[in-house]
Length: 437
Image 1 (tube, rainbow, N blue to C red):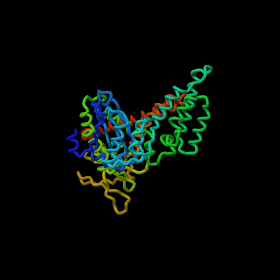
Image 2 (image 1 turned 90 degrees about the horizontal axis):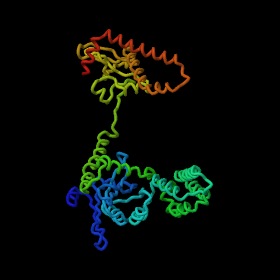
Image 3 (image 1 turned 135 degrees about the vertical axis):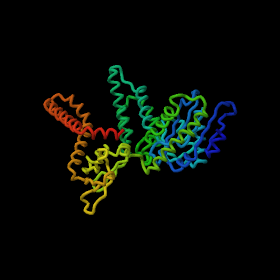
Image 4 (image 1 turned 135 degrees about the horizontal axis):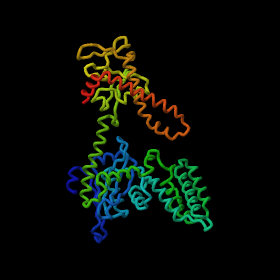
C-alpha cells in the first residue's frame, strides 16, 4: 500500500502513534486520491464519522470525510483513515495532514454528538463551525429522558410515558426553530416547565445550554445557509451503508489491504463513472420527446427506438399539452409508426411519402381515422391507470351497483368490438405479429 498508492499520486497519511514504543500494535493509515483532493479543495462543508465492524478485529474503525459533490448532488467521500486507536490524537493529526497536503479548509463540519471528535476538530481548526447531527441529538435526548425523568408513585406508567413524550415534542420544537429569539425563548420556557426534573435539567445545562458555544453546535439559528443540507449525517451514513452492503456484501473483511483495494478501485471507479455519465449527457439521464408545431414527432425511449410506434410517454404528453401525435400507417406491415414530417408552405397539412410504393398519405389532425384511433388508444391507456381507483371502489358502501354494472357492460362491449375488428382483418393482424417478432 505504501508503494503502489504513491505511484498513483495518492496522498498518504501515516503516523507513529506509539507512546514510548510501549503500544507497538497501534497503527493508523490514511489515503486520498487525486480526484478526492480536487473535490476537497473546493468544498467548505463536510460530514465526519467513523464506521465500526469493517474487519474481523473489533478495535479497527474507518473514519470518512464526506461532502456533497457539486455535479451529482450526492454524498462523495473525500478522505479515509483506518486505525485501531479511537482517541483524539489520530483524528487531529489526520485533519492537520489534510490541511497541509490537500488544502483542506473547512468552514462547517457535521458530526455525531461525540466529544472526542469535537476536541480533535477544535485542536486542528479552532475556528470551524461544528454542528451536531439532528438524528443523534434526538436520540441522545430520548435516552436521557428515559433515564433521568421521574414522577412520583401517584402517576401510572402510561402517564409517565405521555409526560416524557410531551417533553420530547417540546425539545423537537426547539431543535427545529430557526429564529434566534424564539429559539432562546423556547429554551427558557422548557426549563421553567420542568423545575422538579433536576437530573435532566443538570444534563441539559451541561451538555446543551451551558454556553453559546454549545448552542451553536445544535441550534438552527447558528447554522450557515450553505450548511443547511448537512443538518444530519445522512451523506456519510448512506456512504457507510453502501460500503458494507454493496462492496462488502454484509461480510467483515479479514485483511485491511482488501479494504484499501475496494476503496481505491471499485469505489473510485463507481463515483468517476457517475460523474462522467452526467457530463456526457449534460444533465441527469432520462428520455426526451421531440415536439414541433404542436405535433409530437418522436421519443428517445427504447420502445419507440425498437418498434417505431407511439409510446406511453407520447400519449402522456398529448394528454397534458393537448397536442396531437404525428404518425403514418405503413401499408407494408400495417402498423403505426411515428415519422418526422415534411411541412408544406401553408403549414396546414403534412405529407409523408411511403418509400415502398411511392404513394402519398396525408397525415395530420384532420385525418378522422387516425385521430379517432389515437383517442381510443389514449383512453384505454388511461383506463389502465384507473385500476387503483377501481380497487378502491370495493370499499365504498353506498356506491350505486347499477353504475358499476353499466361500466362493466361498456368495457365488455368495447372488447367485443375490438375482437370483431380483429376477426374481420385476420391477415393484417397476422402480418403485424410476424413483423414484431
